[in-house]
Length: 196
Length: 196
DNA sequence: TTTTATTGATTGACGCGTCAATAAAAAATA
DNA sequence: TATTTTTTATTGACGCGTCAATCAATAAAA
Image (tube, rainbow over all chains, first blue to last red):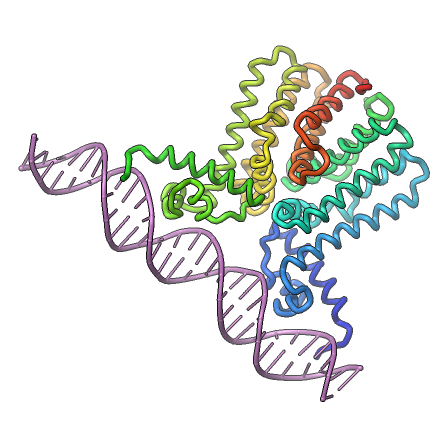
């Protein structure tokens, strides 16, 4: 009983299914049937809309990146000072929407897949550059450019590192602790003094 | 023309081949034939010595961990002060032996695989705990325990994050810069003052 | 009647793991 | 010492399962 205008609905459902499948298996080694099943359709339909598995995975990563960007823009809207812009980036990275097992597993898996796929690598480079420039947009108002650059680099590495360690379910347990760690680093660098 | 006592030689060759294969493909999606071919033997022989692919991969990760540990012990031998112990951990992490594309790719790939395999996860937890305790062995001589713990956590995350970013071949280009970043963080935390 | 939505069945490739077979070294036996 | 037997090293061929991708067929909306 085909209903008209299903394409966007199915696309979205398949992307969501891909994220949850990756989250559960912990890698991109998920079959098209598995994904399609979760989305409530046949694997043939997934191929119909996305052509090949690569493209579905690519669309999924792009979707995750887009959501991260949307959240960041929104948070920037509420940030009045440069310092708050920096904190906004950190807060979004560890927000409930972003810092959940599914998304973390996806990030990790896509990092690996990026070694093979040039297109995915390009996508992740965009993320890296965007993260850097988002941090810089606040930091340049506080530090000289050269040092702002170094702090941005370290902060980005710190965020990525905390994501990985979370994937291992070892070390950093919750988002609060992660935010505290990064903020502590930033406070130290920006005020020259650490927390008690 | 079978020669006697080949087992240790083949095992080592297969592990080395696994590392280089993973390094080239950038993931654990390497076939047994590919690995065996690089080691100059048939895939059947790889199965003969390791039983299954899982076990070969497991042995490979264990080998990488063991080498890291050896290097760290050696570096500790040359460290006179607590501060030097901390720097030794950092230096080894970014040494020529450890911070090379092959090894970095392997780390990343194994992190992903650890989501599926409980045994691999256990192995990586051992690494995480060992890294933490290695850092603590120096930090506890400088900072109060609670703060030492936080600094160790952040340093570990920083190291892991710099590894990932190196895998992307974006951001941090060389080991020197990576070491400088981590040392700068440590200096700031330990002296309450950042580099000029 | 053309377009859109959908699927079951099928194909073709690929890769892990097994097995029987071969050959040389080592050990045991005569 | 000469021989037979056992152990170790090694591989080619193959079966079996899995999975991505295709295709022909069905059915409802336009």
